[in-house]
Length: 111
Length: 113
Image (cartoon, helix red, strand yellow):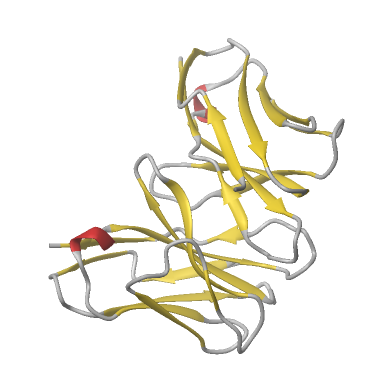
């Protein structure tokens, strides 16, 4: 069974305190891995797509990396506006267009 | 750009009532999806439509029906609402077989008493 596990469930940081969120996956074959940001009362907002091990993508204070078993979302010198829930999803090989989502990491950045 | 638009944003129903959640996208995507999001459960796929005229069950389809009205619109119907269907419902769209990300609406918050 395809599975996506995110850790930690919740993370509290002080402004400027860098850290990483983890997304580990067990799938039959990976077509792509997606990171989303979700603010309270809103739908998930797309951040990054990673397709193969070793790939990295950056956007402002966020950097996503991918290995054969997991992905990391590194947050450098976070600000309070980075507070959100971060979701990881995988697109599995096999012809289906479905995504498998993790349960998310709720990030709180205190000023 | 509107992207994916869902209506209504909030709804309260009584057990046994029926209702239809509406979703429309203006990104010319072929695929559309309905998810529910519950605390501690993450996003779970209810139904999806890979192209106009086709629909398929996802992980949690029981108690729901869908209609792909045209390329832009995909509706979700609860025929006889139950308290277990209290949730936040998200519609998404994407381009079939492209491996591009899905884009989400802002959800419908549904409470069933």
